[in-house]
Length: 81
Image (cartoon, rainbow, N blue to C red; front, side, top):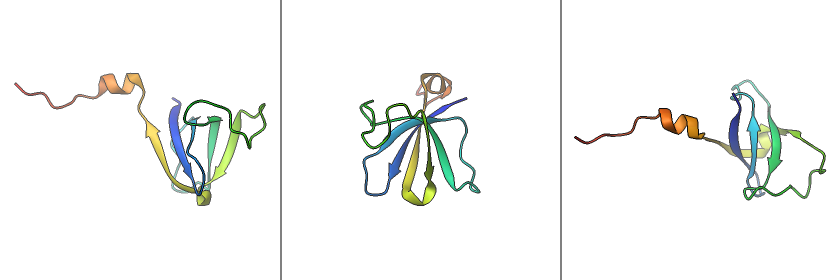
C-alpha cells in the first residue's frame, strides 16, 4: 500500500509524494515517489524526468501521512444517539 505524504524540508516549501511503506526509526532517508509541490506542480530544482528521490531525514522537520478515501471510510467517529 502506498501512502501519500507531505515532507517538510528545512528552510523550504513542503513537498508532496508517495512512499511505499512507513519509514523505520533505523532509516536515514525517505524514498519519495512522484515529488511535487502542494498544488501538484513540478519542483523547479528536480529534473523533469525524475520519478523517485531520496531525502535524508536530517534535512526534514517532520512528515505528515495523509489518509486516503478508503481509510476515511473505515474510521468510525463519535456517534451520538
